[in-house]
Image (cartoon, rainbow, N blue to C red; front, top):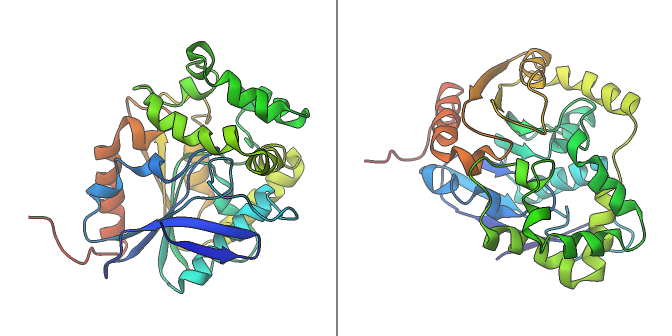
Length: 285
């Protein structure tokens, strides 16, 4: 897996390559690029780039002084895109919504369009049902305890936590891979705790959200009809906030739409890309 050394440390990423329009995918904590494993193969003709962000599932630790706050990780994502040296990027987010802060920070000049899939928004950082898990990460040894608890089905399948993120269920081998780095590395647990406890107060989050209306490029908001973590009213509210926003709701899915409805998500994503001028480099026969 290739790596880019950024100001905060190394970022691993996958890159399908090719001459098609560039799509950069964000993921949730403590996940990694496998969150999109069902969707990327359906996007023929696009160059899909999937960085493993330092949200707890990253395989190599960041520098000890790295800013891994919501704002800091958003700026790190922007730095990653800069280092790719590509323009007209489509930024696709699911679960973690902090990539939107590139707009509020005035660092979205390389982003041509946004796709926001059932993600954190407004003051929902972190989502209400998982706030107790974030609180656990504030306690010394809390992340270590969390990784141990995730070994037990009754905990990992709890509907107010990871068990509520997919109606189909996240395969054990995928979830094991997401938690493996924090399980074995104290430095990764340090990074995870930094991020998990970094959400600013409600007033700050809402002030950042107000600036999102400055983004005058196309935005597709994809919301899940049976999501337990992202309020359903946030979908239309986000679509209205962005001047060129549109909303599509996907039924029979929870937060991880790439897990529950990958074919439908790829269909609406491709339609949006074509309609907004990002034609694939080739057509599937």
